[in-house]
Each structure stands twice: as structure tokens, then as C-alpha cells.
Image (cartoon, rainbow, N blue to C red; front, side):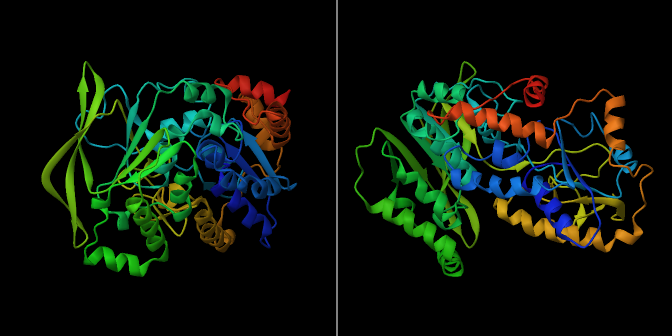
Length: 438
């Protein structure tokens, strides 16, 4: 269940095993590829290039895509047991983790996941976005925060060579933004940026990246973190270089702030008019407030404090961790007993951390345990590959296929020829189904 990288990696490994296996990949969206299609910034073609490898997996004859099918609405676990020996849930995480902060619900306060879905043209979100702020705050110091900040700060024309949807281009082109502020509670040594993502901020000819030299502070614990991680050391060295250089004259500015903990989103007439932060210190691995507050003149706030998976019907769920309880990918019930024939992989298994490539390790562990359980799995009542198609037909459930998606993909690419930004983005799922099956 789920045709993003996690689900496709699992299908790939199952197909390459010695098992005689037929695999159906169910996907809620009409299109495959999950996070890569709907969660990666358009100016990251290197990451989107992973689609080429996933494409080859879906081309295999014994792997079948059934898109536009929503687990919990169109199908439930009892239905799946009728047709399959085992089910792997790879549904990912697309919601924003909540942030308990006064004023967080004001107009102009947004979740990063919603914004990412908008600029990636996700059919479930509106076609427009309220880009009216000249100064914006982004809360969080991970790669998603950088993506959000970079897309907000860049000019729309810089994104033209990408697959940015036309409506997103028009929205960003009208944006009056001049300053984007990124805030982290801890210091630069604790930032979760990857070095490559961080350096990309400074590639824009229109965006000046600014780091306050006073934020370049390191206690003994931070120094130890630098010595223990080459990646952390690379991130810090980049930040130090930016902190000591003279400020340039690029028309837009992206400010990276450390040791600033959000205290309150300030509002007036129900709208965001500012952000209050408390200056912090990092002592022996803990964030400590200093009692020194600063008010920032911003008109929009984006929280990038993590994604959250959704609870799936009939499947145990840990609401605190936001994952399906499991042991090595084997799903566990509330009494920590294995649920026969049910497995999990990807972010719904381990939480929304790590890069896309890390899901390969998740899939390998899960598939190995599934294959080890093969002799104990209860066979389905209906073993014919066509049985599930007949079942969907009796329920009147329309679905997309890999062949149908190929036609839509070719149409999207033809629209982009010459301009590089046109892309089919349909709000209504049923309309997208008609396009893909035409």
C-alpha cells in the first residue's frame, strides 16, 4: 500500500528474491512516486532523478500499479486478505507535526507540508497560495525548512527550467517577499541540514544568505559533535564562512538564525504581524532559555518541525511516535504480538527522518522478514491476479494503471517542451483519472 520510493523499493527487492511472487502496488494518488513527485522541491532535479530508477522497477511485468485507490475508503485490510498472502504498508508521512505555540493558528501561519504540496502541484491542495508577506519566518533547521525558505526567497524566473507548475510560477512571481528568516532553537552544530542542501542556498544570484557571527558559538558538547561527524563539520564550516563575509547586494535576503526559540506568533486582527523568539544557550546537550526576547517583523510563519504519518483503519498506530508499531517491519498489535501477514516499511515504519535513500535499508529488513515468514502465511481465497480487478469493478472503483500513467507522463512532458515549467496538475482526482486513461 503506497507507490512512493518505500513501496517501490520493497517491490524491487521482492521481485529480485528467489520467491515466485506477483506484486500489486496500490496508490492513493492517480500518479506513482509519492514523496519524489509531491514532496521534493522543483529545483532539485538531482533528487527527482531517482524516478528513473523507480521507473525501471514499475516496468517489470510482474509488478502492477493500481492508482487512485484509497486505503480505508476503497479497500480495507479484510478485503486485501482475500487476494494477497501479505500486505506491506508504505504510506509515508504527508501531514505537518503540530507545534504548541501561542498564535500558531493565526491567518498567515502555515505548515511546511501544505506549502510543499502546493508548490509540487499536489491535487489535494488549492491551486493558489497566499503569498502576500514581504518578510517571512520559517521555523526549523532541517532540509524541509531549507526547501521552503529557498523556494520562498528565489525569484519565480529562477525556477523556470524546473518542472514547476504554471500556477505556482504565477503565484511566486507575484510574491512581494524580500526577507526570509529561518530559526533554530539550538546552535549550528545541531542543525539537521545536509551539506549539499545548505550550500545550494547560496547559488541563487538573487538571494543573499546572511548568518549572524554571534550565532557561531560552540560549547564542549557541540565541539564533540563536530569531531564525531564529518557532515556536521562541513555544515558548520559553510556557516562560518558565510558569517564572516561582507554582506552583498543581492535583492533578496535569506537569514539563518540559531539560538532563537519561537515563543509566540504575534497577531493583529487575526493575522500574523510578527514572531517573538527567546534567545537560548546550548549547554551540555540541552537548550536553555536566557529570558532575552526579540520581536521580528514578519507577516507569515511556516513551521517545518517535522512530518506526521496518518492512522490507517484497522491497523495499530502509535500516535506519539506517528508510526505503525513493528519489529523489523513485522506489524505488532496492542499486545505486541505479530499481526500475521501484515508488514510496514518507510516513514510509516521508522518515522519521517533520513533521506530517500535510507528507505532502501527499511525495505531490505522488511522484505527479509516477510520472506522468512512465507511458509506461515495464510493463502488468500482468490489467487488469480485478475480477481482483485473484478472486485474493484464490482465496487465501481476507477483506477489508474502504469500504462495509463505513461500516457499522462508523456503529455506532461510535451507541455513542458520549450518552456520547462508547464505540467499537468489537476485538482479533482476523477478528472486526472480521465486524463490518464484517455
